[in-house]
Length: 109
Image (cartoon, rainbow, N blue to C red):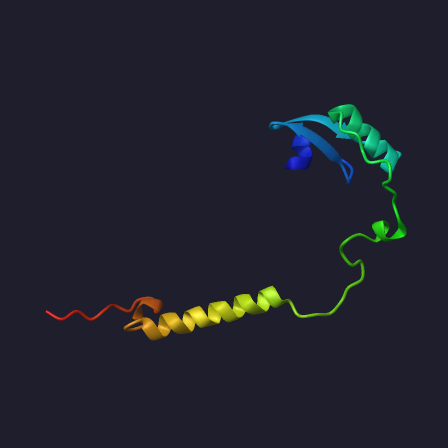
């Protein structure tokens, strides 16, 4: 819905917003550091540092592009937390009849 709302057809697409409205779009075909610095300076008046250079490591990015096998620790801790919570709730509950549909509590008169 965002791409339709702002007319985005290519990625990456840089939009500068003022409040909730887009005020400028960086959609140059020549996407270099110099054209990006010129765009930001023309729109904001903020001048870039002159000693910035793009290296080979910058092209690799912060995320690996090769699949690596490993343990998803967040998923593991989530499963352990849920299992621990279910065990705790089961132990602390007087009965677990509320978990079984159709079971009614026994009432004493």
